Length: 252
Image 1 (cartoon, rainbow, N blue to C red):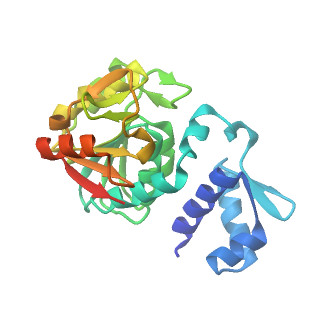
Image 2 (image 1 turned 180 degrees about the vertical axis):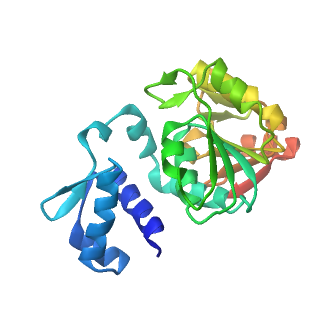
Image 3 (image 1 turned 90 degrees about the vertical axis):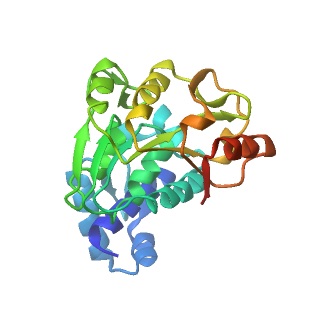
């Protein structure tokens, strides 16, 4: 594994476990402890982690935030979904990635992709892909929602609508057989709705916990979405709605 990929993997482990020992990381990645210490120094310089005796941990201001808690819910399923979606991304594509927590796992899974133009409203996604493999990053700014660590307002929408991405990749909070794709934060849902007509393909990401969950804000109908990436097959009602709309199901 090259250093950039290893550092990204170390950061993922830290976000899951809060701290790791140098010895365990060296064994996990089959490298020397000195190599891990060099990786940790890079994380320290970027403000992403800091050394403790015999190990490394996240800064206190990165622990237990609402966003971080959501990122680590259903972490294994989200990681698998991210990897499956990353396989749909081809070199040279322009992709829009939203601020959902599964979208962050996708961003991590793009560690070996090159030649991408990545548009995002998410501080976390932007930080994950910034400077990686000479991919081009464009950030939709404006007022930032602290809990979601993202910009949803008119500035972010106007900026993002200036692009015609090959893929608009959106995390979704709920899927109902009758009402389609839903979310819970009105501003987040409005941002997603505003971008869907610009993309060549709209890809939704959802783990099993989202199936038949009752959302409060409508985002899209099944016919508005080209692809759904999930970790397990959906219930019969949702599966029938996907099939009727021609929405492709990709299982991680």
